[in-house]
Amino acid sequence: MGLPLCPGCTCCPPPWRADGLWGWPHPDLPFSQACAVGLIAVGVGAQLVLSQTITQGATPGSLLPVVIIAVGAFLFMVAFVGCCGACKENYCLMITFAIFLSLIMLVEVAAAIAGYVFRDKVMLEFNKDFRQQMQNYRKDNRTTLALDKMQEDFKCCGAANYTDWEGIPSMPKGQVPDSCCINVTKDCGVSFHVKNIYPEGCVEKIGGWLRRNVLVVAAAALGIAFVEVLGIVFACCLVKSIRSGYEVM
Image (tube, rainbow, N blue to C red; front, side, top):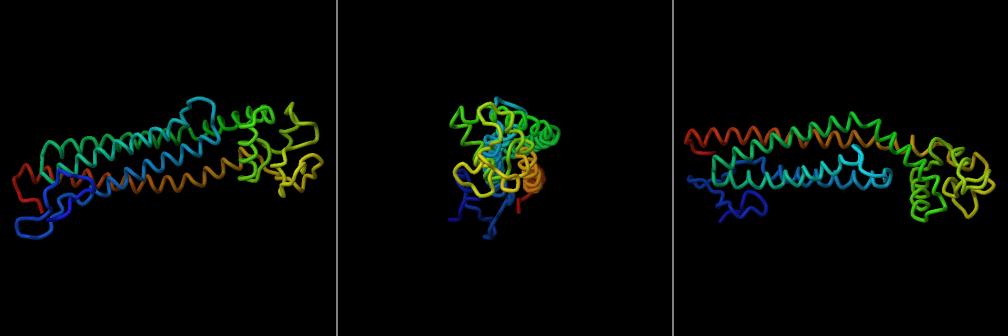
């Protein structure tokens, strides 16, 4: 007995052809499932990053990871349908697979366009949210810990620079949070020297980090889209073979 073509697919008969050779009706299907898992992972990662920067309500930028996760979950189910359709050489299932895979591609293209269009809006939202959180520094423990962590992790101070802390009511004049210090020690921000704190603001520093990582996400998206195109092509070829009554090789 052979193994099923797709992991978890119980509808597949043993993948052996009539001539005794190994048959693989749709080699793209396992990769479609892998792409689905990849999309979910990318969506979860993006959501974790944005949750640390944008916390005020639902915005176009913050909703994109949710769309990516939903598309990934739907793609996994569609790949399972395609697996069963390929194994059983079922015309209706393969047509369904090709149609839904095409729709998923359209959604991904729309999400990519939305991400490009709203890229500046996301940064504006982050800048506004960061400054609002600064107003609550030392008033709310959760906000204080979040700002300190961002400043330490990204080696930055304030929104635009360290002078932003001068207008914060809870911060005494001439002081900055200890997390602004290059070498963090207790009360190092009380009587600080400019050379001993991070000169760059967090908005620009984190924005640069996001821009650099967009290239990685874009490359992953192109790879996933390429596999999906192959899936559509293979599905169409299999549908044509089924309709023609030819043996699927």
